[in-house]
Image 1 (cartoon, one colour):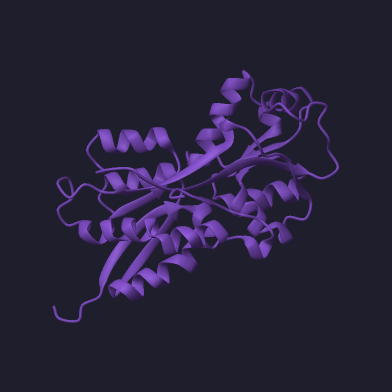
Image 2 (spheres, rainbow, N blue to C red):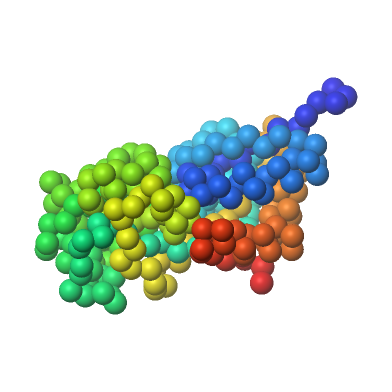
Length: 249
């Protein structure tokens, strides 16, 4: 049909949506290619499920193991790293840790001190990383101290703020909404184990012939363009932070 607007369905994480990055990047893509990007913001686990059901054209996720499985099982074509940021541990301003430079010891202290911890509990990339860290520490908070929200990142942070609890979050969502999370502060934000890489994965046109694969590849090229990569590098400056590091230097 002449004049029909192409629609690209992007399955992405709540963290990328909540920080406002897509609101800045996608309008330029839509204008350039005369299309509409329909954003479905869920946890990475839900994004993989929707992708396997053929309900999207491309994924923007941050869970490397799940990404590799998605491609190995034939649902996605290739993983294109586009940017990264860091996970951070946040919690009540009045609390202090005995150990401040070793995340594993901090996690053990959380359990020993029976501090409240709020988890997304939604099989998202953030939730999976949190579980990996508990496993590495060899501990996990008792049920009475551990609350799973089953919700996205900003909703989980709001619960942590309300209940005076700790939480693992990506830095972009936390700093973007810090004004409404005034009872929380950053406890730990360093280390290789907290690097959080985001990748685009077009769904397989062989598995899903109706997927808009050509437009999905154009979105990959757009994200990796110098213009967008430079914008990613500066995004967050108005809040006093660098939210993401571009994949292309």
